Amino acid sequence: MGSNGAVIHYKPEADTAKPMNNDEIYLLDSGGQYWDGTTDITRTVHFGGKAPTDFQKEAYTRVLMGNLDLSMVEWPAD
Image (cartoon, rainbow, N blue to C red):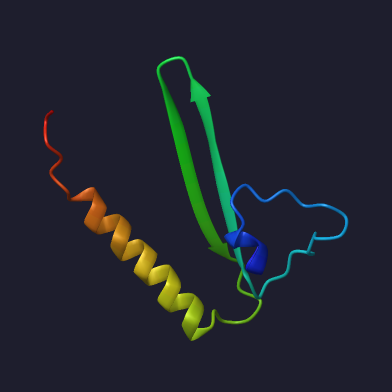
């Protein structure tokens, strides 16, 4: 959450854990490995205590635009 959201597979420890609040973006990175494939699901949520900052809106929008662009790529068959 917040600054800890940039840490890949962050695991809270007593000295690094931050309480959740309504002013930062919460990042949920989840997934699983199965016999026939791997899933990876990432979600971001702002709970709305205060309105998101301009920077939070900009970051969210840029990631969304990148995902939309990636979804339209025509990948080679080989």
